[in-house]
Image 1 (cartoon, helix red, strand yellow):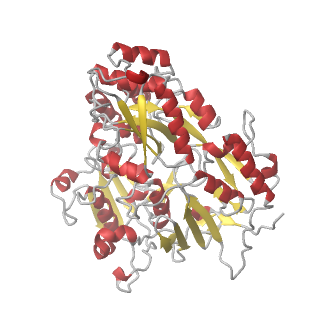
Image 2 (spheres, one colour):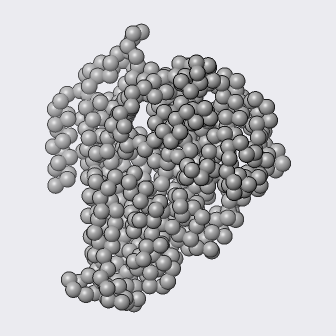
Image 3 (tube, helix red, strand yellow):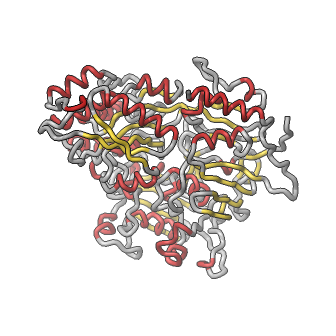
Length: 575
């Protein structure tokens, strides 16, 4: 039925003729890049925001010290607001950053008419914000306990309290000293959370600062209709930064729409309303791609000049289970057996074929390929085996009662509650999980809500189980294995997993580079995940990206969420 619907929709789109023409740029007509985000933003404060939509916008509004070279593969960091890459001394314990002197915040009333230059003290202030207990920053784990003297700041917070290891040596020189060498430290300084903000702006707007973003990036906020549409205007005071000999950004405006429905995104792209589409939704692949072993664009779309770019995403899909939930959580053998049975019921082959349309890899560990620490030889001991799942549940007292549904060992009813998103793909995921769990006698109900609301409830420990995904903040295994580190359970550790054997190994790996010893410890941590099953590991997607024929310079970066500053639009003549 779904396949027939896709064919009908494609016929309707093709019947409309060529995609809507991108307006021809001229001296008087601004160049406009048209993009979408799949969920609404929550706020534009770098220290607070953690959802993909908000981070995508923050990348273009605020500046961390470093960013990634757009075209370098493997990925490579480069100076952003620095005159050069930092000086590293004392065996990786001391970093000195020399700032450029042409970095300015965009105009705002908080500056009282003055042009506000960025200084080293601004970065000291911005990094301190990650420690502010009032903000409850989800990014505090990046720095806490790592900078010399930050324990005093954590014990008694104050923006005017000094940290021995975080100092502005002079107006444009920042020095950071670490308690222990951290091979990933520079990666932390290339994410939106460590972008520079002005203290007077934060103090002027207080709790509403996330609604008044004032940054130094290539764009500034234009119009903003919350969780609907946003326009970013080129910051023409942006410091000189060149790409292929041209000054960034290359377009005058980015119009961003919030499009939560998968079908609306694809139809909008095919009608020419968007210049590119990243990660073609699984449920719409039959509408756009052939059924070949290596899918290609349908001929009628290829003739229109559309371009398909498969891209291996640094991303892992997993279904986490709350280890503190009274029904499904805990470390006793009976609870472990229940979670293990759920993992054994997951049919990865059907998921990849039906949901991902072949564009995915089975996840053996939390690490996707191309992330430092990935072990291509490791294989998960947990495979699809409903017979073993049934035997395990029988052995630990989850007997079948009325209607064939299993009960708890004490005879009380057992009903799982899985949160889900109100979308077509969300409903298809529900169907697959219902089928898998019902096959081993487990009754499951689904509670639908927006992902942003589910994440908020997850941080409070109020969600039993939820299928989600993690996109790499930086290309190292630490960024994935920290998701199950016990002290992070108030942040990204939504499973609230807290196992000493895991925590101890994770703490050892944090001081290591990409070495065979660290890979061995990662494999041991993966074994503990499989043993206690706080997660059901699902897939690593291969993104089917699409672009319009008039889009220029489009390349997907493995880590950064957007490439808007590098994109250009050319004149387009309807065919």
